[in-house]
Amino acid sequence: MTQSIKHSFLFILFPFLIFGQALEVVPPDYIKTVVFTGKTPESQLPILKLGDRIILTFDALNGDEDDFYYKIEHYNFDWTPSNLTKAEYMNGYDNNRLRHYENSFNTYQIYSNYKLTIPNERTRGLRVSGNYMLEIYNDYDELVFSRKFMIYENLANVGVNVIRSRDVKFYDEKQTVDININTSNLSFNNPTETVKTIIVQNNNLNTSINNLKPQYTLGNQLIYKYRSESSFWGGNEYLAFENKNIKGANVAIEYIELNDLYNNYLYTNVARANRPYTYNPDINGNFVITAIDTENPTIEADYVWVHFSLLPEDYLLDKSIYVYGNFNNYELTELNRMYYNDARGVYETQILLKQGFYSYKYVMTDENNNLVEGAISGNFDETENNYKVLVYYTDLGARYDRLIGVGETNSINN
Image 1 (cartoon, one colour):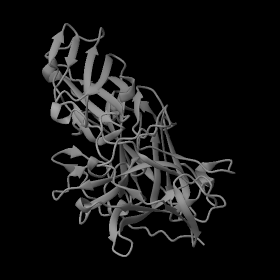
Image 2 (cartoon, helix red, strand yellow):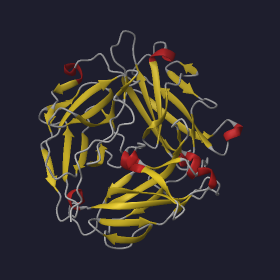
Image 3 (cartoon, one colour):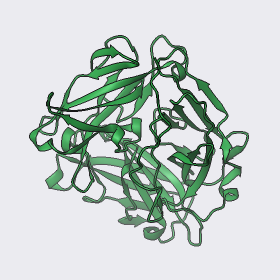
Image 4 (cartoon, one colour):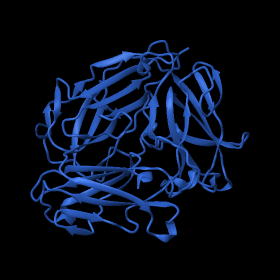
């Protein structure tokens, strides 16, 4: 009854380093449900205070109880390698085996769930703030996948405000982020060069806005009020489904079949770009693993083939369309690409997902393979979005970029 998952690696769209900048490596198809969190389990983008705990879990679906190892690398603001040695940014050492794993129980799909917690007895903690990459290797010292995370020092207050776009052309489609940075702990020297920012919408680093310069300086207060440079497309509320009951009707699921594994067929979605905006509370692309009648969903939740279908408008025909969300770290790969079914007149795909609640949307890429996130869902200034602002500081003569403060807000709170 168990689905066979081969030990094969996905074609990775980008190499690990492009022009010196580190990029996350996409997991192979037998690695699923990568959950990377800190104190707040609902976030898939760990931004943690120096000294806080980090937790990574993932499932290996090959049934081999493989050994995996982890390494931690420190990076600058722009994801180029920093000049620090491991001894300077780490207490203890890495390149250790993941020692905690459990096998699935009473599931059609067998898997092993691995868990890494930092600090641990070998990696006792991280010593400095900034950008980090957690890398997972196999027995052959091959990089299996990697994930970014950030460590901050609470040295600056970061005020974040979201308004409708100041550009009248996009007044109904974009949201603009204003920033106010204030600190009594540091003296900003030449802030246009030493202070750097990253603005992140819905925990998606792929669409972040980087390195805006402060427009006004009032003592140790830096003010950013751009007309268009700090604007994001508003997007639309995410779609969602829930399959915590593997045998019964759930949210957005039309019908269920059991073959080797359960198959959940979602109701066919429609393009929303040319339809009026409708508010629908969502979790901004995130997902939560849950299953009814289980004591420990981490190892008792099963895997299900989830079938997505989209009724396209004429302008979407012959386009590259993907199912998009935090469940796959907002990656665009063959595993979440949709293909047109002439017989049904829909784009469709199936994705192997662990039971739970998932929010997702459909996105398109243009002829140059650039993401056009709102082409299918639309862009509306009313959309509820989460925004985080990360502030980095590099003092004169410093050898790395410190992450000195983090601000967060929601567009409906402004």
